Image 1 (cartoon, rainbow, N blue to C red):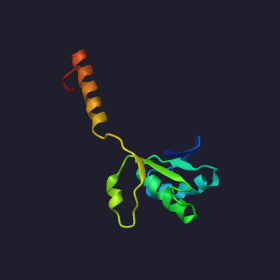
Image 2: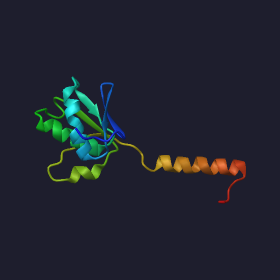
Image 3: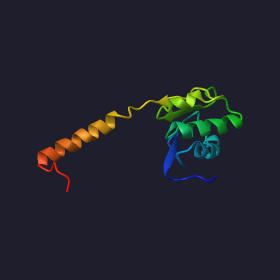
Image 4: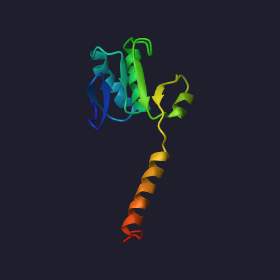
Length: 117
């Protein structure tokens, strides 16, 4: 199984090294299938979709036999032909950036360092 160790797929406390694409999720599904688990939470929706495809090809019914959950709510994927809705964790994309910029601005103002070098 060719995978990238950068992004993990977690299953029941086990971390399976996995990349960030649907193909990486597909490739990691064999390791998921070998475990006695009923759910997998993937790094992102692409990995989750790839894993779900491979798990279905192996005979599992999603979500009846195995729950597959993604983390980033890439809703445009639901518009693909033949695609079914994916359980996903929706994360605010703009708020963390605004909060980080606000914190940085406050730190710079407090230190008097408001001009670029």
